[in-house]
Image (tube, rainbow, N blue to C red):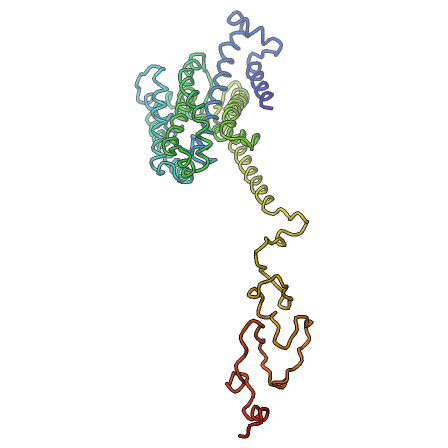
Length: 433
């Protein structure tokens, strides 16, 4: 499925547009190069744009998975942690302030701004001890950085304002091979670090205490994961702006299609899904309102957020159904789950008239089921025992008789609450008053 979507997105990106290049003429246009109009359009405009979309989507998808796994929060995305806003601020500030800088310095400014936003978020949230605190603090930091961007937009003139506005929404328009080649040095730095960081992400998912018990220093590992995410996000943001919510959607697609995998296996799938998402989103951005172009980041946000929320909800329902199914398994004999009692565990509920068995300890019998001295254990329910010769039946107490293992009752002349009158007692014993 992923390969099919990638092939469809690549074919449509290279053939559709003005001029239209049929699919059977596409290999010839690629080989012709600058010798024909179709060759120039395909090789100098569409192919570098497609390559940049694939690289940007892969970097954003991998960075989103790194952030979510290291912070143990499925909502941890670059847009909510101040990373994308910091990178955009670092690139937009020299443009508004009319500071001329070479193009090679822009990724460094983006990295500095992204590192500043991410570090502020982690430090303000207590080094990421609470996933919810990190998310709320990141939203506050991102809002502050976006407010700074708004101040810069007010200070800019009309031409710079249009450029900044299109840049902040994430656009792949008018990108060339120079923009693509500027990303390769940063990718050579980020890829080895990403491979080394992937096994640590699986340990961080267990929690800080378990990670420390396994020999992983959670705070240092979290800062290292943040640094890798910054190196992946900032150069892409410097070239094409913050393409929104790709880092949120791609990891959820990877988990949805491989639920039993771990972070090591999810990482390449998340990068691949990020590349497909950006390549597909760039098609309506280029063709929906042709000849005018819309930012690709607007389409990723418009389609990615509802899809990501739907995937998140279905994943939670699946986990809840699986956990409830495991808890409510019936016994092997087909009885209800509450009918199974482990050996040695006393019964919690008994009938008041249950007959004790010989295997039951005497102290476990309920007081209502204990027989009186004149009763037999086989007395049926509802039958009254015969009166004894010591006292008439109407003088017997109405409360339950003591069990056979308890002490005998006190003498009648001791005056219990329900004892017979003294005259009757004297008549029975033969003593004169």
